[in-house]
Length: 317
Image 1 (cartoon, rainbow, N blue to C red):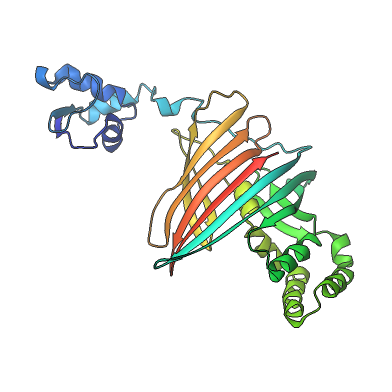
Image 2: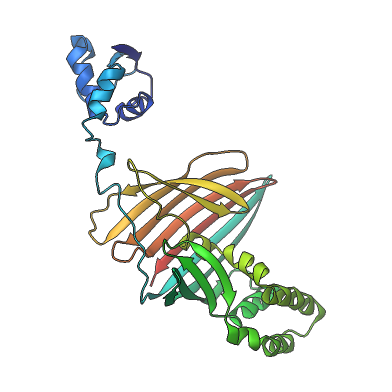
């Protein structure tokens, strides 16, 4: 046996985790069997009192019972991916802000995204992705040009693997064959030299498949919707990597029990914190039937030269 003096903030759960005891209920049970009468635990831990801890062999015996709550089937779901026939619209809201000293800059916008499953071939699924109904706070001429330029390319082809992870993005053959006409029409709508410079860069991204693929993989909707969150759960946790702002975030996720029989709700957090990425918190609701995301909410803060915040939400409509 070992003795631990209870500190402010201590819980049975975090102490059990420190000593590798899977089910914290046995920590209370063991203590009450071996403690003095005045140290008996009824409900909560009291700072300053003694806590009797089991030794290694006793911890192993408890763990061998394999009855820890986090090992239940509910908290370790197998999230499949069955998108056949999927064709849904989503309302997307984005709020971005940055703070330098006492000054704050903010940008809000929303749009409707459509995701349509097209076919499955060679262990890949092809989706068509479009955006529409943009609502920008600032609506500058360059923003309008950027929106109209992208709308001229839709639908975008998005290829994902059998786990729902994004592989590559591209432009349909029909759009690529008609791109000269598309570019001419955009130049007619925006006949000034700055628009011409933008459209030259736009054309470069369109005709270079690798460049276009990389740019589309930076789209917040695509990189969060088709992330690796369907990785296997073990002991109530699942881990995956998420690329945001040119950083690789290590994400840990747990199931949040919600009482729904047709949905799985997942809570996501960044596993580590550092100087560059301060915080990531996400919540997503997934259909048990096909493994497709029904709603998604995340907040992400990032600090480099300034503190930046992003709030991103997706809701099936």
